[in-house]
Image (cartoon, rainbow, N blue to C red; front, top):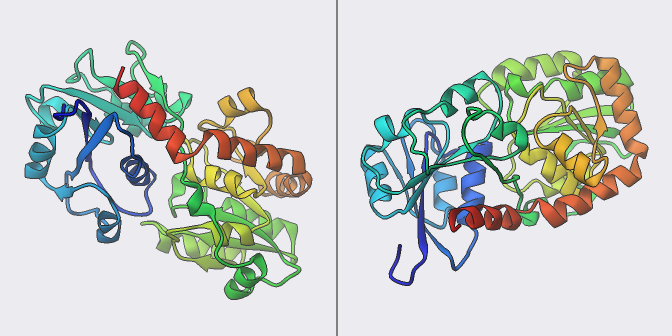
Length: 340
């Protein structure tokens, strides 16, 4: 601990770039100020996946490589890690403090990384949803800390009509949107499938980037030749406000940051029952218009139409997100666990 008794928390990550949910999670946490902790730094294991813009915007030291891991570890009481295997053997040997492993997802890749026999009994295992926490081995104690979003990310700097005109949306068009990474496991074609099925007055709008962009965009354009493509945005408020419906059709999720942003912005959401959606709806009531895993185009289209008139659902989701799913709530809960 520091001389004034605050707990020193460092981070180890295989990447630090955008767009990336885990990287945004780290940035949100270290941007939070709490008198109980000091953020000692972020060590990135490789320089292949880093964003200098994100590093420049991070309010604690960020360094790359094995020497960086050792440097951050020597000034930390707890190391927070994700996406790494055999951490105490392959990443940081003889670290005397605790390691907190974060589960950001579900599925075989995540489960393989979380089956880490090098961890100690007093190390922490934390999932961003109950589904994500279930990816840890069944015989360990886990905690759930729901993801949160900084409300300033969904603030608008221009009116809806201006944004829509700027990206080429006509006043009478209904924008069916996808916001996030171009990655096949996200089922990014769903918004285009819905818009194509619904007809001429509906327009698919995509906001984001990702390493599979060159594979996915041609398929979007085949479904919807007039689809609008907007690059990744550091603040998504204007783009969300331009949409009429947000579609998340992933077959699995840890806990989508994009869906929280859509809820927080007051946009109708169509979603598969993935990540934290089921547990949040069990607690708070319906927050989305549901669609089945691997939905057909007709199912997506029907769900979009239903979402547009589900005003009570959209209002409830906005209230829940702004009360319980902020980055402040997330970081505070995390620190509560660290300081027990």
